Amino acid sequence: MEETVKKGSWVQVHRVILPAGKRAPQVPEETQRVPLELWAKGFLQRDAHLGEEVTVRTVIGREITGTLVAVNPPYRHTFGAPVPELLTIGQELRELLAQPRARRGGAAGGDA
Amino acid sequence: MAGRDISYEAVMARRSEIMKRAVGIDYSRFAQGPLAFDYERMMAEVGYSLDEIRTIQEANSVGHTPLIELKNVTAAVRRTAPAGKGARIFVKDEAANPSGSFKARRASVSVYHAQASGYKGVISATSGNYGAAVAAIAAMRRLAAIIVQEVFDSRGLGQPEIVEKGRACEAYGAEVLQLTVGPELFYVFLLLLEETGFFNASLYTPFSIAGIETLGVEVAEDMQDREGRNPDLVVITHAGGGNVTGTARGLRAAGARDAVVVGASVDLSGLHMASDVDFNRKSFTTGHTGFGVPFATWPDRADVPRNAARPLRYLHRYVTMTQGEVFYVTEMLAQLEGLERGPAGNTSLAAAVALARGMDEDQTVVVQETEYTGAGKHPTAQLTFARQNGVEVRRGDPRENVPGKRIVIPETLDQIRAQEVDLDRLRRSYIRNAIENTGLKRVDPTELQFLMDETNAPKDFVVKALTDLGVAVAG
Image (cartoon, rainbow over all chains, first blue to last red; front, side, top):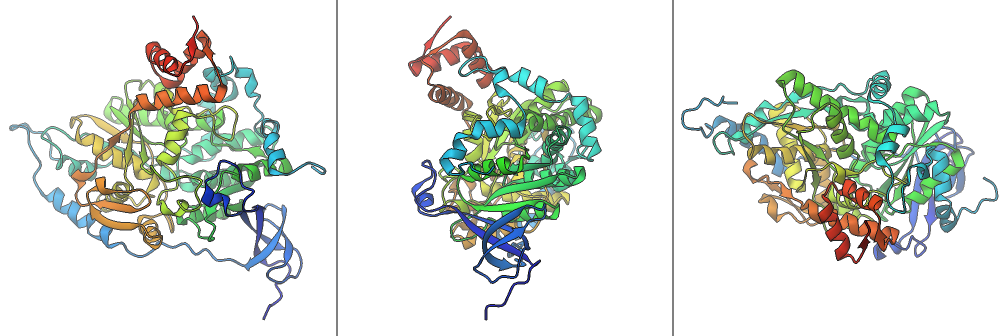
């Protein structure tokens, strides 16, 4: 089922920069235990399959090699779900504004 | 670069050589001793004049953003204040800059300088709005741009706020390199500088900081034009220190020396910035204490030898806010003022709400930035992500907030309170870092004066701090 990814496709490659255990000495233990990884995107320079070592040309024309991990990777970030804890804040504040404000003994302080 | 050793150790060992070529500044020119350097001379000789910066920024349509009086927010705050209290709150709508944040001011000068110096491209290591700013200005100036970001934890789960900023960089035509958590991002950054010969569009060069000075100038001039006087208090979201430093310098340049300069950060105490586990337990990726405190107490931890952002020189007060308070005021800004803006930039707005409440109603507070909002970079996105990562979200008293564990959205506006940070503690911490990092056993009058300038503290304070550390003071 491994389809060929055509040369010129917009793809993502992955590389391990520093393996686990070879991290900088100052990083905490949980970070030391995992590798430093890098992802980059570009145009595939030859027909290839996912998982192969390939070269891509980035949007500024640099060549980067790495393991082919995704084709035309989508943006997956969203606005998330409505947050019930936020939904009533507007109404609460409008009710607050409808209340009279504390006044200095008779002084007209402007009702801003 | 054939034959060059590109191992981590070798590249880190070449860092000053790489940096010198990539920034084009010989920082040793400004050295006055093992610790001291002539900060003002560096800013004057390396940077550009305010008039030059204005011209550079106008060429990119950067700056001259609207100053908006938040009348409904002020009115709401006054309903939580004693009679006669509740200062008027204004916001400088920096989201109106190209790329959607004040960072365009920094990028405009950096990229101009890169182009004027003959560099073919610029690189910036940033997970923040600065990446989009560099990418946008580079697009205008037809330079190549590479942005290096810390995005993912080891599960490959990306911080939504950073993923969005990466998308924005790509939208402006930049090459984006995405990394997992860790300070070794700097190693990748150095390798790229060496390989490409591009300019290091650092957040911390004199160019970058000088670019923010126009923001302080505009705040002062806008208020002088509209109100006939300077603002009483200016609140600045504080992370790496550039925003505080540049804005405060601009305020001074425009004659607003009497304005109280307040830094504000989101409290993320207890979360380790280089931790693979903590990384996605925070809902703010900038404007927080994880940068704010270390950069205030030792600025020279940045990607240049001498950081031009030196916030302790300029801060009159420093306060922290909780994540829940910032989300609350972000909602308030949208619902009462019709301004939907990104949360991180509203850290200073949350502080302004708390501080204005205790000020007289004829006084003014200026919040000096907003930032753009979008998918990933929005309260609903960030709180949804927090919940997915096991962080509890509920209404309640913000004092019950626990960074990385619980986000408490205030139940009422009057629960928003600024937590004052003891600046003297940060000053002592700065002095301790300075001594530890230089190994000085004895401080001469030049170093002493430098420490007084750096901490904005009187001589007896600095001498006492040094004596407590067992350091001799000469002269």
